[in-house]
Length: 316
Picture 1 (cartoon, rainbow, N blue to C red):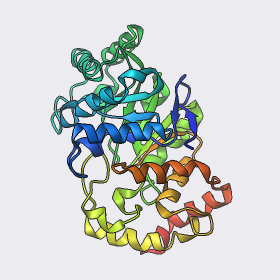
Picture 2 (picture 1 turned 90 degrees about the vertical axis):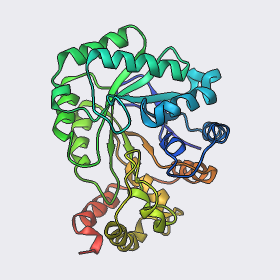
Picture 3 (picture 1 turned 120 degrees about the vertical axis):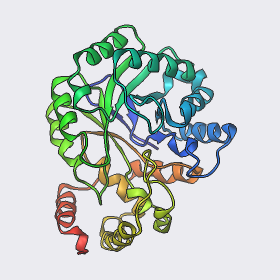
């Protein structure tokens, strides 16, 4: 059964396995008619997953409408985060108070809800992070009850690293979502010490390195790595396959598969509230949900993983 964790210093508890709607709305993982998508979301909920992550602009906000269809009769039993900041999918960013307020109202309409649990600013830049009017708008939206908390979403890559760490210390951030996995720990690992210092909740996406750590790593060059909808190049996939061979010790003899071990590694971080693997089949719900049942890695194990990461897991 899926375990639950506090989302940092907020009053929210989330399932340690989350569900991102990008797999259902992008078309990259196959076609999901609304009925089929809602059925999978509801199955995930029946198996203990209560944290769902979506976006206001991804596929025109369809993820939000799917969540409304799946959970409007049990809205207070699920935790929904959505993202704002882009004016259109792949378009320019706008973190002005007017745009944020319009985006929130549109998301609430699609969610058929009076509130959003966590509103995430999607890839804010230094100008946004330094904009006092933006932060005041977020506080106003909280005071009005339209959002419970606000957070930041970054990655992949170094963009946002300094912005995020500054905002974490200075603002009342509900959570930080970053791109992170056992093969690609940098630069996002630099968020963890700050999160530990201030009891910040972390949400992790791309735990399987674009499919390289999934059950069929050969699919990694075909499916996107995460919500950013890029695919891994063949050179990365070839190297990751060799590295995965040298990672057998983290799951063999422990009852886990490599995809499960990749999640357990991330959940060994005490600041991580939830990890969002790519779920697009019922068996993913079952496999990933079972991760909660396994023993966590010891500090000795984690130290060895860190050392092996430094050495590239034995691959030059």
